[in-house]
Image (cartoon, rainbow, N blue to C red; front, side, top):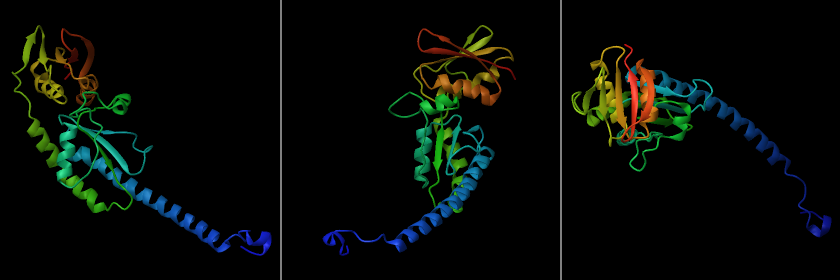
Length: 240
């Protein structure tokens, strides 16, 4: 302090420190803007390359109105938690908004609100400083990892858990969790004539979201759902 108020006044403002703080803030904001632009380019590469490298993938979210370092996509016929663990073993820590967890059968409320596929969901977050080389290695590892998870999950032969129902088929997926109901639907849709229906029985809450999303991705008609003796019956009409 100074001589004012018996030496208890704090003195004058530290103008050099104030100027330095303002300059630092300007520099940090400029660096943040440049880093955000760089991360947006990296996430855009993931968004564009993943559908080219991995079949049956739905990239989620608006292509431009989004945070620069986050990208989300969902893989058909894949358990999200299994994929998460396999990627972790390969050195990539990602998150999953999938409904397929060991503790719940409830789909992600965010994915449900967006009306997109919930199974096999992966959310990639790129922190500041993420090198482009890490993104390229992720794109190299992902296709084989997804293929391995799909192979590991497998699916019953088309004749298993399937029975005739007039002009269509009934797929009994009761007691089986995502993504098995969709896998079994995909395996039998070609066994019915165009215009006929497949009736999928499922007590997995995720099926209410994933079967319509599968129809949208595969160009088939989702007719709707109806109560069944156990679980819910989801009706899909083959259109092609």
